Amino acid sequence: MNYALIGCGRIANSHIRAALSNNLNIVGLSDLDIKKAEKLKDEFNKKLNTSENNKIEASCYSDYKEMIKNLKSQGICPSFITVATESDNHYQIVMDVLSLGINVVVEKPIALSLSEADKMILKAKKMNCLLAVCQQNRFNEVSLLVKKAIDEGAFGRISHSSVAIRWSRGNDYYEQATWRGKWISDGGTLMNQDIHGIDLLCWLNGSKIKTISGHLYNRFHPYLEIEDLGIGHIQFENGSVATIEGTSNLYKDDLEERITIIGEKGTVTLGGIVANKVMHYDFEDEKMNTLFSQTDSKNYTSVYGDSHTLVYENIIESLLENKEPFISGEDGRAALEIVLAIYKSHKLQAPINLPLNDFSTKDMIGINLGKQK
Image (cartoon, rainbow, N blue to C red):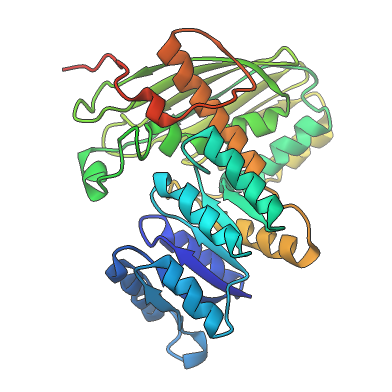
């Protein structure tokens, strides 16, 4: 399959590794700064075997529309394109690619407003295209095992659950890209970093959400308008509750993404940098205890993990078998809705009932976060 990438920034390495691991033919790389695309290509070719058959031969572009036009004219149109640009550009680029009948994988968040996400989903259906969102931590081995335990009833009724994402993002991170840390183009730590853990927690629970409330704070980043600490409370329709803590305020280094699920017949805590390790398990069902004891908890050192390869494997399988991807556009919208509901709750100082029809990070401009001087 032919493949192309739009956006060659911080996360691009993970996508190229995933494409290569799945034997995709990388035919195009695009970034507004074409030097980033060229550097990405050169760095990977240095790492790869020097034989011509193993090199990335992709052409590099500063204009993604020109890239697609040229690739089509050469008869090497991509089977799918990944959009890994600034968050506020996701909507327009995805819509443009879908309009050409090309399948799309988009980095999280799917968009910065629910109305944009809805239009993307509708466009994909109209064009009979695949639309998938890269929320790769669902593919972690321990995540899949916890989901299996919940679906098979090993937890019994779930009392409550929690997620805590405790990472570090200092001034240098925001200076690397001027779009970060702004309501108009990014959102805060809940939207940019913590949406992975929030998605994972709610996917594992499996119940529809009834009500969300939350509070936002800016403790250590007074030069930014967004939150560096977000606290959320979720009431599920099945009666269980969940809490969310997301922060970028850790001193120096990322610490953990920790998820705990407490049920009447079992308890699990996942930890590690991206909830990739089983820290604790205890079930009434001894067969489930055995399964957890045999699980390989991978020792990731990067907050990106290594599950992008599995995302791409699933995309290829979905295209070949003409089926929905494991993480669809609707799944991306659901994660976005949770974050935006927390934002809206802070803005209105009131709980928010779901479904949330529309809201955007732009609606948060000018909202007081109680910055600390």
